Amino acid sequence: DTGVSQNPRHKITKRGQNVTFRCDPISEHNRLYWYRQTLGQGPEFLTYFQNEAQLEKSRLLSDRFSAERPKGSFSTLEIQRTEQGDSAMYLCASSSTWTGDYGYTFGSGTRLTVV
Amino acid sequence: AQRVTQPEKLLSVFKGAPVELKCNYSYSGSPELFWYVQYSRQRLQLLLRHISRESIKGFTADLNKGETSFHLKKPFAQEEDSAMYYCALSGGGTYKYIFGTGTRLKVLA
Image (tube, rainbow over all chains, first blue to last red; front, side, top):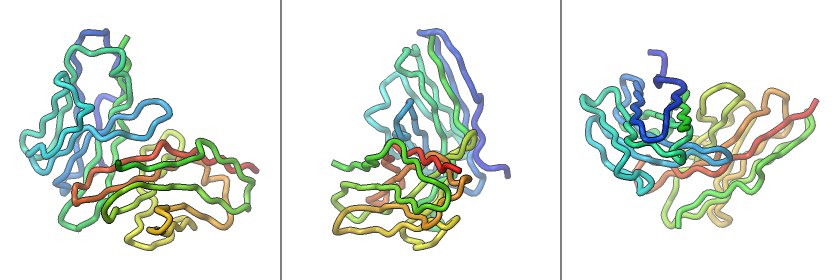
């Protein structure tokens, strides 16, 4: 297990196109989180899953954003009809509730540029 | 409102000098506080959590509920400590974080 893996590392897309990102968490971790980070800011919470259930979505997540974790393993984040304001680093993290440890393991992120 | 404030965007210190990275929070319940670090070209990684009361790489942080602060300290800075540091808060059993805007630490030779 090499940690949390995110693909692609970089994505450049034209405004109006749809994009999908993938996150593979640490296999023993039952929680998976998506955050977004823009320049000069800390990561902002988007959504999280416990196993396959999406337990919370931020109000930042407009209807153009959807996330899934179909089998409680990997997750995808899709952005439809991208806008220039969607340009950001999208971070995935995972953790385990079994240990009672709130600490995350982060992936390297997917940098999205909308042109 | 729940909030984490890191008042310094940039902190420059000389090697061997003490370091204190400030973090203040606003939270109505009992929060869990963390420090995350991001070295150049690396992913964000957990440095410290207040419940562990541990010292990692010479860094310590004490939760002061009266002052609602969780400052990160190190007595003698090293060049390899240069990085971006984020303070984060979690609470209410949600496991989601509220991050501060981060402080870039530069340790000068």
